[in-house]
Image (cartoon, rainbow, N blue to C red; front, top):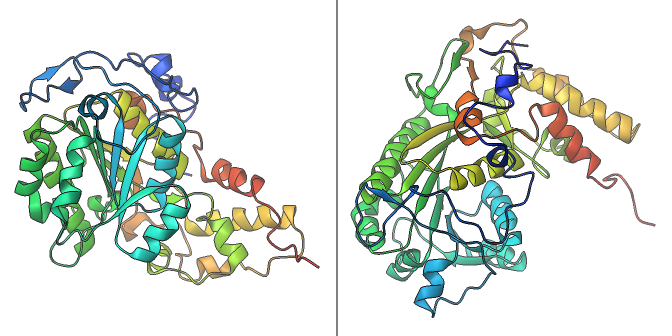
Length: 380
């Protein structure tokens, strides 16, 4: 395995000077129902400037009624543009802590599915967003953006940047985060890359993501919000992992086929994304970019071999998967010239105080399979 700039056993990767123990345990230790955020981290909403003034935000009981203006200003309210895999996990976690959470999706079928899970959801055509949906943003304190770029148009919401700016100008928004991808770094010839590494995206989608990053950072900064971009590695979690792929015998996605040729891929468990998001809310900055990945970039073949071994040990004789399926197009020797990159997460640990729940795909996959019922059990 590749060595990190600092060794994995370096205490500096676990506890960093200047980060309090309470901040580092933001996810492991549940945040109180009501708590004051640190002074000087949120902007005044009466004057949308870049000057940050003390403000108190409180976790309170959940409600979707916005009839009381003072209530909408005092509660923590998260609006999520794009209720995908990550955001559903995050929304559920916030709801358990008393947040008001609302999200968007693009189809009636998905809206019904999400509402059955207990989410409050708006239908949204990001190319032509309804004014009523945009106006609803005024009542929310936090905004998470998880809508990918589309075609040649780029980020569909940023097509309406001026409308968004004028809508949010007199609202309650304090924090904004855009979920991006480590693909914006492009081919790095096996180098370690941190957030200051020059971006050089090669795919059209990655180029559009980089444009979207700048657009959302500029929008948030112009309005004085705490604004972050999270560059996510390959996302996995319960229901979406190498273990699940093997059990379901699913065909490979285009992204998985592309990753076959890479010697190393950086990954991140969905729960670690959630804790990083919470940490950025608790320790906000005016403008920040963070790599959100685990400590263990590894080839896809290695990950699937480990997942197969876990399945065979827990349910012997039930899998017909061959690790060759994952490695058919993989390089036969370790060769980083194929454009691989080793993504560093040190800024995430240093500035946000995140201590990974799953520092390796091994601990992440083990946790996933430990929580699984027997998928091969047949009812009589």
